[in-house]
Length: 603
Image 1: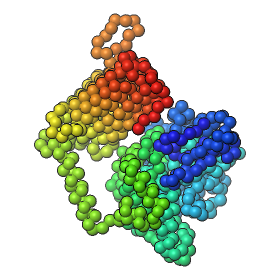
Image 2 (image 1 turned 90 degrees about the vertical axis):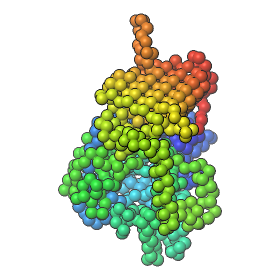
Image 3 (image 1 turned 180 degrees about the vertical axis):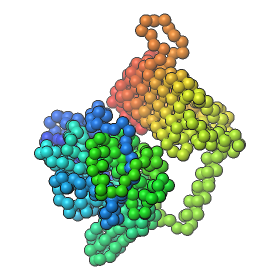
């Protein structure tokens, strides 16, 4: 049965509650931070495990890339509705509304998020065109989908066409609930920075209602009174008054965009970013379009459209007469949409705890002054000084010598062997040495920090060697501490998904090594998928792939040898030599390493 012991592994998608065959066995309860999580009534549970079978966070239950079918390379467009009123009233360019109009024209149903009486948010499914005004525009808080999923399934089985828009995690939950794709289903997700607390948003609206002495009648989270680029929060009240403040001066936006205090825990380790995406169509603001094609930006909103399936392509192209659309590439869209790949930065636990304790005691304006004060002239000056301090600190790590600066610039601007998604892909600190064969590839989907020192005056060297046809790929920020050495031998492929290797670590890759997200690799660890010498045996292979799962902790001086798979959350004890697979959530120790404890969790 579902048991939420780690909130980082639950986005509250409701899939387990709607899959459960027993009424009221699983309920969604709000926690003290204002997020909903499932709770199982053990008195009525029949141990059918249906809740686990549909959970998108249980890896063996995830849909394969073949179902639903997705394009090998997504199609990317900038577009906006030709209907001026719809475009101005929409979050970005009004494309979701045009998708919805098309569905209504086909007598289909549209699913999306709407505000409730108490200013919480839920998903609805409707075939009433006049409901689109409620669905249109972003809602930046958690949304309940408990009534949506069963209704979607009912209409699909009845042969009706359905369009559903939700967060990537919600779309994943929908597919696991449905157990298959349907030809009459079109799904849309969006580039999601994070999901915010319902409780925080309700406190914010309560403060505004108290300030304006009236109930909120209509909430517009991205009003364009001040333009699309400086989008505003707008709240209209029953007494005829309105509140409008842009994203730089509204306390909810400042807190959301600058602190991550409102962010759901699962968002810090989101599993639904990047590609391939499950939704047929992905929607977003095309931030930065003015730098790509000025003709597509009138400060009224321009949508970024990413088409992920043939079905989505056909549906999007059917809007032809209603929209202005130009094709671009992912590379054009990535600079303005870091949330396409990047997860939010984690907030200090003590600060977060204190914030939610204060939220129960004080009005929202007092909370804002304490935790995310509005910008003043003095704060702006202090922020600029802080930036200068960061630049100085950065240069002191890289080195002020011209040769160090040249190395940084050459790697990130002129070296064709370095493929990067951002302007900066590699940051080599002092005493770091990189050698790339002319046919090697260093692929940086995020930043490789090379040569980080604990003793700042140390001159210990950090080395990276990628030989002929070798590939070294970084998918999330990764740090090589000083004294570590990575060697990718001819034709080898090393892929790192975020984390660090400590001082003295050696990685030798001749076949393929994959290291999961948030792996913690202690000092003097050796990871080798390659023996270095051939033994004359009939079934002998000199190199075999190594897979190290997410959140694995490898202790001091341990050795990981060829052909090994280490499951997620496992711990390898200090000095252990791992020659066989390690199950997820286990502790192994010894030479050769053996399991000494199971079902462990660590952080």
